[in-house]
Length: 253
Image (cartoon, rainbow, N blue to C red; front, side, top):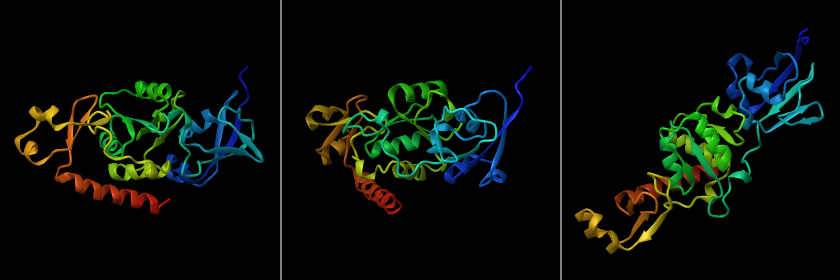
């Protein structure tokens, strides 16, 4: 004989409503279920990924994601307070305060994060199962536009980007963890994420174009892929744009 049906009511607050259909937003949602079900399972059945949840309450009782839902429970689901603290599992000490892994639709965002000095792992051929595995095993924050990817059980920290525009996505990420004070521009390779090191001009002279060889004397070399960087005409434009991004981030926090 099967278990009798049960029912619980869920109310989602703030940005968690982004995952709900328009008629559900801001309203209590009744959820029917059978057997022993965790809060995590039921909120994800309603479309909200567990890494996006800040806290859970039933009356005066604080719940964890693995708590069992009882028949008749009224569960209030809150987003986290921003900015978030740096995830302990993703920190690599002072050199790497936070590390990311991005899905294969976020190449431009990966370049922007690298430009600001953050460790942003990205490959355009990486599959969902590998993304989730890397996020879990290496303690990287998973950034994605696929909210279903965040529902994988092994994913501990992640964020569903609301915007489709890379520059706005960058602002979202910087604001969410208050990363502007931690930015260290021009220390990572935009191509492969490797660290850059200063290199004597004489050591790379044969690899430079004639005009570059003539007009520039300071160079950096990617320790992983060998890409060469110098302060060309684009450098000042990038500095101005980055200063504007930092200002916009600071003003909205």
